[in-house]
Length: 473
Ligand code: ZN
Image (cartoon, rainbow, N blue to C red; front, side, top):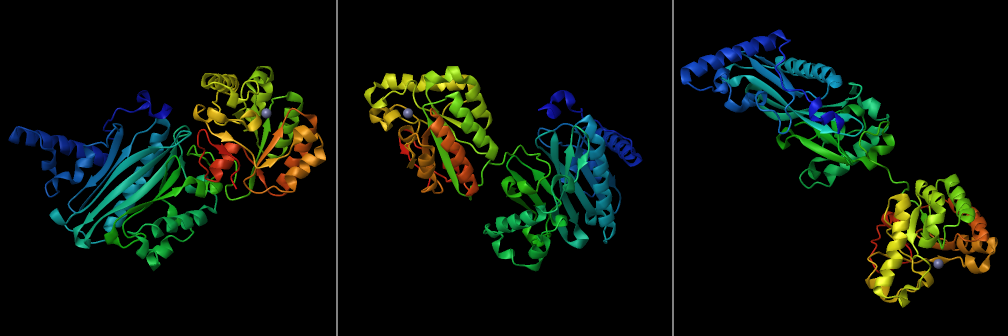
């Protein structure tokens, strides 16, 4: 929030450091006075005889919600060029102003390459800005440039974008944000974006489009950051014929994230690859530190996670175990307060069992529990009152009965498939021992060990309150 707090904003002021600007302001005031005297009211547009009234309105109307800005402009008989730029924070304004000058110089240079008339035939370039805040003190500034040049039959829109780090005040270059491979991912995604857009699909086979969306950084130099996407800007004529106008393509951050050196978007990549095999290990009836911690150790060593369906009456004595599992990204499920048979309880007693357990865990993790597992797999009428999905299993290790690590390991490794949910109990040392091997073996076979919620999300399975979900195969 900091950089956009009111106290940090500049009050808009006309800084007249530049001679041209000072002269312009002088002319403007003079004209206003004359017009004011002659007409009795100030009509700003009168002083730009030969321009349409709204062509320079950008100078006097700041973008909505933004009242700190400055302008650079040059107006003469042959052309007028003007750019309005934002004032964002003390540290950054110098860099923004330097960039603004460079852009105006570029535009002037471009204008001077072509024939331009006077009066109504004058070339007029005007640039407005938009500021898009990103995360970590970064902002994107997008300039939309309207080019009007009657003698060139030109009337279009172009873009320039810049990224700033408002804490250091520096302009951030594309190569500071992306590694050299990013253009490959961007190129692919830009093509996909337009191929899937009926308005543009038929124009994605032209040399213009193909050449200018090739995997080269220079093709993607105008971009801004949103929370989950990067917007790429293409002026009129850049990738589509001029008469199709300027276009903006949205690319999901997830598609480019691997090639980003700086995460300035707040995007958190999933801890799993949705396209690779995954299994959800689940442990009931704990926590029980001596066993649970061995399982957490094993999970931690491979970067895996599991789901623990805990009993509420054990939670208070196992605070550090609960905290540790939470920090490792494990999930907690609700297994009732004291292993109650829900099918034999009244609605209010069911609610009491579920709510008290939820509160005990939430007091430690700060999170509500999303999933239930009914003791004895007995649900009965509880289905209608719990308001949360039940989780069953597709592999039962029978660990509580077998108490034989090797048999427990085999029960999993001999039949496990992508999307399985495995049932175990973290009350027993034999289960902890088996889990250590299972975790190592499954990881070795390429399975990702994820929580039940992650498994369901990755496989696109909807979790329905009161229903039992057995796997995500
Ligand atoms: Zn149980």
